[in-house]
Image 1: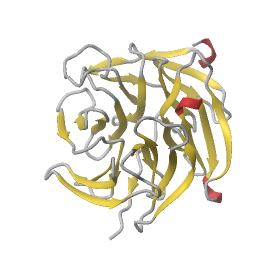
Image 2: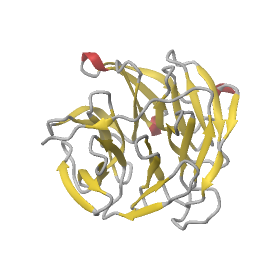
Image 3: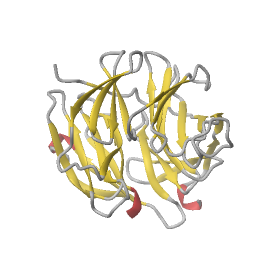
Image 4: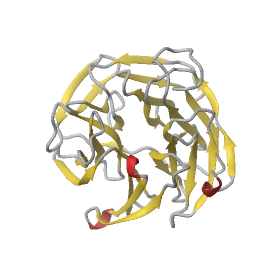
Length: 293
């Protein structure tokens, strides 16, 4: 990991959840709660900053991503058939839209909301077939658009503080791309190419200084890159498959980190657990999706 820069800290385990594939790290600043999913385990989870006040919901299909909405009682969640609105207190699921070219062999993967309230997410083949995935966007009028592709396993996206730049990875190729959003997600270029010893880029988030933090599947860390792609350091995680990250807490200086590798049983060892690390820089508040109607 010498190429990823100096060690910035060591993450600590706060929930030994044993997730098979933890993902979708998301901080709700209004409620002071951290949301995440176990994709393969078909579960949605929530906890407080310290890892307490835990709740879990079983879902009918694999959840790939989730997002807050302007309504605190509802969240957006990406299940295998498409994008849904979910009310955690009632368990009600409402179908919103399906992405272009979607089939029963595809599922939704990582996603986030931009500063305009649009929900961006990736799709992929359930068996990770090459070039079967794409990047999509659902806007506040309920219109779904295919933005870019093909991908194999799209991860991210993440957005710069000024909203001008979007980052998205295609994990198996070890590539992270950047796009110019003010010109319609144009000017796609390679932002960072992971080395063979770095694992694979997975979930990501941008901090208040415009630097990109990336979870390393197979690499046991979350790394920080400057806006120019220069490696600035890493938070070490004591399990190999690190999947996603999000800033949270009252000062937005706690990095929440999800991992994979458990069997789905809570109380297991560290693989599949949720970790946190304190950082010197603050993160940005999560965007809230604007829903049609």
